[in-house]
Image (cartoon, rainbow, N blue to C red; front, side):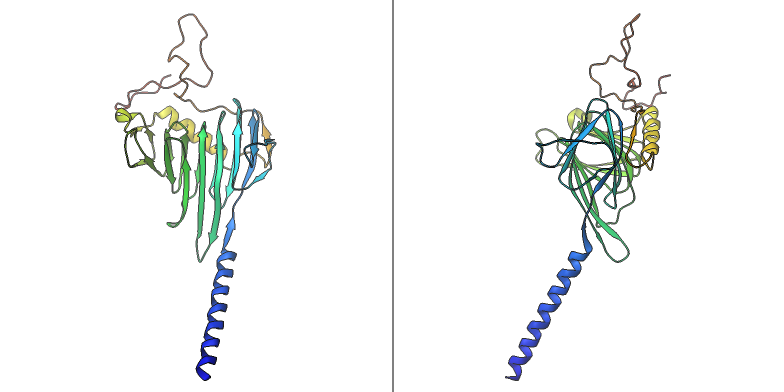
Length: 272
């Protein structure tokens, strides 16, 4: 009987320990959110089910599972707080906030953030993360693992790093496994390099400088929920319908969108 009593006490004690551990884990885990800090120039909306869309005006707090999209002129700035700092949606962008959570342990915060960029382009700033944290941006082309940097990622696969480092997992056409690329500051990952096998190239100075300016404006710029009417997109060579140089005697150009002309293997001076 004494042994039975001891076993019962041990079982009860073990159950209390498991319950206490579960309560502690639950208390540590928290769902993250993204606050809309600015809607600039055009318009944007969001949906939690992919069917019903609501216009964004600034100030909204959005949870995991929310999809945002901007029109041809719209820009949206987000503050992910503990789940990844700042993200900007540029015109013509669709972004899903797939996962946002964080655990506050002893001396560090471990985050788990995943976003899916199906169209368009995002820019972002994220602080240096703990080794156990995960911040990923997925696109139809590749997966980008960001550990603390200033970056720009396009749904077409291009990723430019202004500061820090981005790891790219890219699966070329016909390949059975993803290839890992490290993209340091001052470089761009381009999936079309090496006959579609992907590669990194130096970022043109004019693009690097403009991205730095855009990110400066993103971090803490403006008033919470502000509707801003002025924003100049960074130069880009993603516009396929624009000739590199307007035809003589015409005004066939797109303001602020002059693409740089460069050989990816040779640095050249920026165009005046």
